[in-house]
Length: 285
Image (cartoon, rainbow, N blue to C red; front, side, top):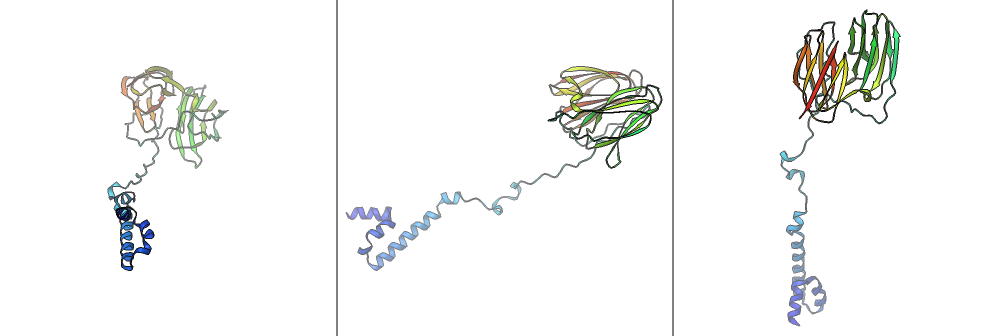
């Protein structure tokens, strides 16, 4: 029986003190209470409890604390200004421009504007990026179309021609919101504002041909390089690429052009500015 009591005092002293309380002298009761208090204090300071205690922010090294990256500077892509025979411009590095997605939940209804002679046309285009399909100047006089935002700032010179015109131009591919068009004309014209779903598509790898200004959507692969020909009439010829994080001047000349150029892998759209026929063949990585 004595051995069992000794084992009990070692294993469960906080129970044995109540069992033997009446048999303990005053000094043994004090010693038993001190012994039990020491055991409980040691249990609360065990390594397992300390391991579960999260470190305070002051204990974490300064270089391991995550911080928010600085915001990317927002700048608009510099527009290429068309002239009757524009001089070539040197490509410059342009901050990434976010191209809006090529699909919207509900495609917008086209807006059709038409008239004869000079006009100012206001419109409200909610979806964001879209396309202009412009035709006019059958009389071969001067024909100009310029876009403006709601603050009256010029967005882009879309058409600047003295020949009959029929072409497709981009609408708000950058950080712009166009709401007004200025038309300078001597005869009839028509401008259709279309959702981006109306764009011509090029399945990669593959090739596409056209005549005049156009916009082409690349689908089905990661573009690598393009073989481009055009501008046989030695007018102005430009090809520009738009990606999710890039913009590039691919071709920019007033001479007949035939050559291979690199295309950024994230390129989604190609814009062509031309006054005659052209061909673009894109290879993938």
